[in-house]
Length: 345
Image (cartoon, rainbow, N blue to C red; front, side):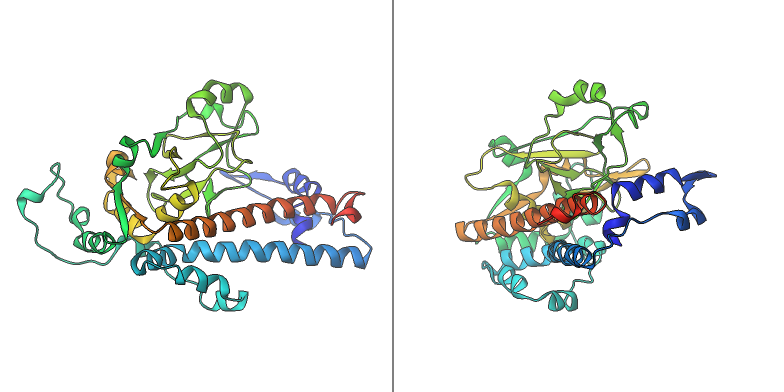
């Protein structure tokens, strides 16, 4: 059923039944008119069921790791060992489901507390208490013995990374083609959604292509928004032909001697980094933004080459397996409705 609903022929039917109701579209009761092309051969059906289940299993395990990642990376950094990584991947799918993290995005904001601060420590006339959260400094001090503590600004100046914001191409360009225009809501679980909301034409793409210079293994980080600020994803080979909006930072690792893109993505998703981003997230008009305060965010890079490599390998493994499974499911969903459906391996 899952494969059939995602096949081209069924999706085309759904679009043809999609009518506008007031300000939104709906398929309504026409859902019952959809025709599903179910293979008559039981052996073929069983083969597709097994292969889809296996691919979805990889997606689920990867998603569970992403959900646990802030806590796992935090444990690795604080304990200066990879036990938390190893323990996660030893679990069965049932154990992962039983132990799935129930923490919400509010965990990134820390706990409310009162504290004193000297007037001489006030920075740039910023009088927001969260900006000076003492628990963050305490944790960074602990990490100082096992990690190199570098601000994003320092890493930029040293040539380790570079980052830029995208462009606002204008709503008139929306819907002019099939090339993705990536916005803050167009990615989740470290990957670009398979069908971004807005597509642009080749002509619009060529106007901004060289300036935006999207490349494989670039990282996108949400700069503007509310709860999405600080969310990140990795550009894969499937996402290179795209543009991104002004509410995103595109970050590129230029010197991989100490930090590669996968390790960097993992560190950006640790609680200590996410909490820093939240303390630097200010309201501007109707939306929040981290703005240029991203320069102040301190990245704790493990001094141990073994730990750096282990984090990088874990992040890469999760991303690769999820993307491979996604593409395989897409292939299955299209082959099941064609004369080639028996040829799937």
